[in-house]
Length: 98
Length: 203
Image (tube, rainbow over all chains, first blue to last red; front, side, top):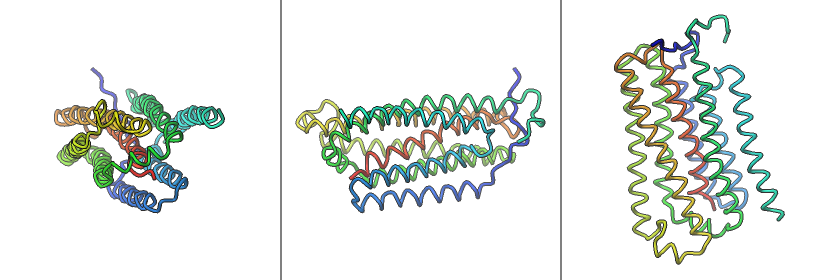
């Protein structure tokens, strides 16, 4: 059976780049625990979601290598995320104003 | 990224595209649970705060570090394999599986302690809790449970990929199985990145 071959011009990501991203993720994890201890009320949920989004951005861009993929991947991700946001947003317009 | 250099039997981009599509369905699966969580939290803010205060932030933080590190080893294994360092790649994959196991062992102790306190679905202690807290713990077990199941599947995927590496089926030229296995693992990581603050840290 013919095996699918990966494209040979796909750049090999050096280890140290992954390590830097990992260090950034650990720092942000410490930051999110610190922010939670400040007891900022409603702001804390926004802070937690904001930091989680930045961490996700790092994982998706570097670990999942989105920046080296063709543009279609980015459009697809955008559609998927917008779909989720639409579902959550529309549900909340119902919950909050019922 | 020029299309001209794409080889005859080369469809690794298509394979990864398929994987991403699958990951979107996973995102919507957990997205539904996050939606439930958000709505019930908006309706029971105090109960959710009280429920979250029973969770062990230390174990939660530790598991976050474990999972982030496992994503690092998974990502590095691709670099190792592509640099023809098969032994290094196998060690990194074994490290990833080991870290996944550590995550589950932590979960075992964490859930065990909560079970001892009578916090588990259907317990008499749970029945006495206010409705909001019952909802919080039900969502907690459902979401971390489903996530834990994904960790188990991830371990199996990496075991399978490691076997292919050892038999030379995954190598510096053909590594799509490794690519897609790692993509799946990073998604499991991303889901935990949201679960951790929402379940353990909300105040």
